[in-house]
Length: 455
Image (cartoon, rainbow, N blue to C red; front, top):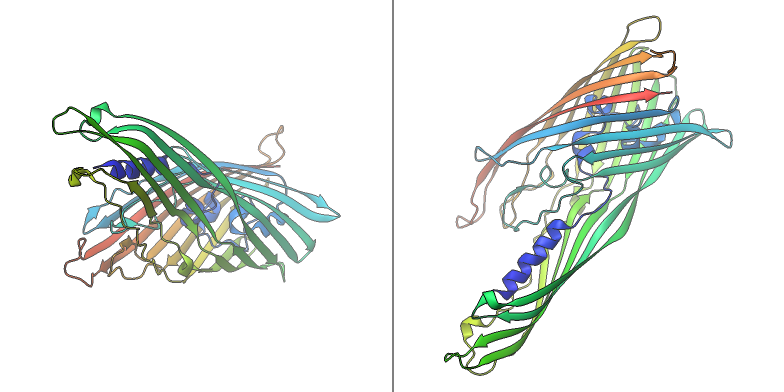
């Protein structure tokens, strides 16, 4: 009897259609936010005072020279392979937008900022895979989501800036009910009714930052990003009359059949992070930035769905044993055992004056190294990952008050990033493992552009 299997499949389909709102994870964390900061390797926690400060350090918003609006586009194409075969990991692409508005609060410099990454083919993706199926855990599902951030910043004294905000998310809870008549001898005559109900539960977590300016040329920073987990809980209930014609087709046996299925999974997880950074002006036109980020990957939650089922079915004497449903065993979710990591980043920007009016051209470069947090996959899990070396370059054109009707500046920025993931070999303890040993490697190309208007 396939009733339980059908119910589990329907529950999985409901979870695949579930949609969650804002999530500060994935695209910005993996590929950077806005072209200037991405081109500098994301090493800008002490340097960002534009819209990108909403992600890298909200305290920098307090130094924004004026109102600024940014809009742009980014795309990341991954070529990630196992045993030499491309795994067809989906590209990440979408619009980026942000705003920073400075002012005064009780005589202190004050600013408000918002930032958004909006995927142009989906708002959010849920993907539930079998525990043993290999998947690129960091780059497959996690970047496929919307990013939103809103922050405030103040400058109580000239050498200190403080910023922070709350990021809002929504976890999904859904319920599926199936009732009616289920024919065990002729599925085409079954008459079933279904009802789906989904709710979004608000989740909040903080992001805090500060910037110190001990001298005119040196800036120091510290940032804290809180942990969050985006959960997906599905309840499915099947309450039907299971019908079976007897061997002579003279009578119909009707047996009440009830099963209650629950699934719970963590579809997105952002580990707790602490960032320390510095920015130093080597000359009035050359800036060197460096960041070190500690990431608490050890608290990472498995994305595997934990499934439990309760079944009630009392067949009469003589009922065919082959049609009697078996209660599925509860899912045993193996711990991922990810490891904490420190990620170093470095970036540089050189600004070249183009005219006495204030036009300038910026040249940028950056690099960061992410050692994989995924341990050897020698047992029943197959989280695929490799170390990552990311190199980025970019340029930016600033036009100062190009039109009489617009006294502000126009900023046009471009960036490109290449990530190299050297080959990593995964060896299984058991020679009878269904997946077996495998090799993983790849590269990721990311491009983007940003148009900014400053007033």
